[in-house]
Length: 236
Length: 385
Image 1 (cartoon, rainbow over the protein chains, first blue to last red):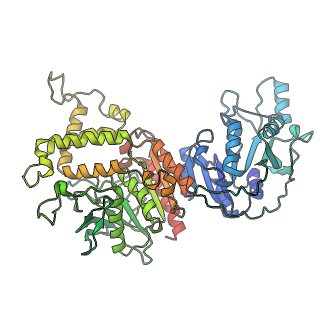
Image 2 (cartoon, chains in turn brown, purple; image 1 turned 180 degrees about the horizontal axis):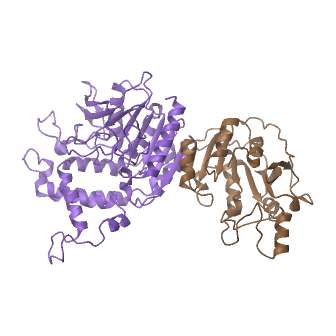
Image 3 (cartoon, rainbow over the protein chains, first blue to last red; image 1 turned 30 degrees about the horizontal axis):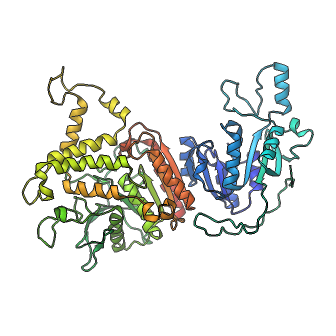
């Protein structure tokens, strides 16, 4: 996996310098390494495979062996600026809970999901009458790790239900540069192969609720968010 | 170099000796008592660099000692961690200055219950004060100070050694750059205490224990100590490892229809027991197991483990556990990691997949070697070593 993956490039644009970042399912730590090098982030990985954990250790990354379904409780509330979950939400046992957990741990979540509503998937099912196998979803039904696939529309519905705000969204497809989209735009559920979201919890701003850490100390003030090329949206 | 391939070549730069606390500077114990004089036996491998930034303290387990990287002069057996300390290995003496001390209360040269009590001129026996993990660490810190080392590049240990590592992070975080805690826990569980109590009762039930004054009477509670070791040894192995190694294999053809060691596993345990008494002191065993039982890092910090690590946020932690370790199971290590995360420390955690149980720490585990090598190499880079 190279550091020029289109989703990496997009995440690199979204993350602000010096941020605290949790990468859930960080594999060999390639993304964290890239973000550390380019954005001087304070990174932490969560990875299930021993080989991935070893690779991260060798790169000097902080990594905890564990999986997103079970072990997100390792991390205290609001201990990160961003929690990243790249193309694995659909492999989680409880995607809904995982999504909530990400936004408990971090102020913003960067989540990418393959879109089951993409035209290739629809055509594949329609033409072949079999479980779709596409370049974004290449595995046969009996060996796919994807147990909770969804369409773009399904995902934005879930975000609405969890009261999450979509701060930015981009469509990714097969190595092409990311394309900023309105996720509930009429054609995107056909056009977008994979969608990458920047999400945050929609909370009433309470000026008295200063975030504190475990020791009752006030968290450091956060730097201003630099502009992103993506379209920012106030509401889904 | 592949760490698992060959026994490590000899380490050329060995040092060490016995450090004695200066007069008027006793070891102040957690119990309130003072220990004076204090002697700490230690070994070193490698050389301290000019900036004194390459020192690594290795902490040993319950029955370990300072001979981690070179053969034990008493038993002639290879150093207990010579798979990790040596040229080309994760703790390479050409790069690091590795220090291994015998804990206070031990019996390999450091002040312990077998040492002479200056008040009576006799071995301490039960007059030796109860010591704790924090006391062991305080004694190590005194030695480290005397060596002119302000900051340790790393403090590393497994089992009881891992508990010392956590205690270091709680008590002397300013002296640490990184910390590696292997197969340990932040406190002793009821089961841990129960097994130790069996061992202690076996020792104290031996008529040759003599209320701890056996040395003055020229005897040793060897049977009791051997039984203690046998019971403890079972806890170091996993059930599958025991089964694989011995199964129900017999020593000889047929059963003896008596109480000889019919089964190979019996013979193995008996051997573990009898060889242990040659190298270990029964009272030391009582004192060190007590220190372990008393260990509860959270309790010492208002019941919140994260509080123990509050000042250690600059320390790079690596916590490792073994999947088949039922003495200090993975869940205990995860609790430590959770607390480190809660305290805002930079922590890595890996569970090493193995069926060898708690003792995997000493054994051929390429994944453990890989994790240690990766962590030390990258941490050394961050330290500019």
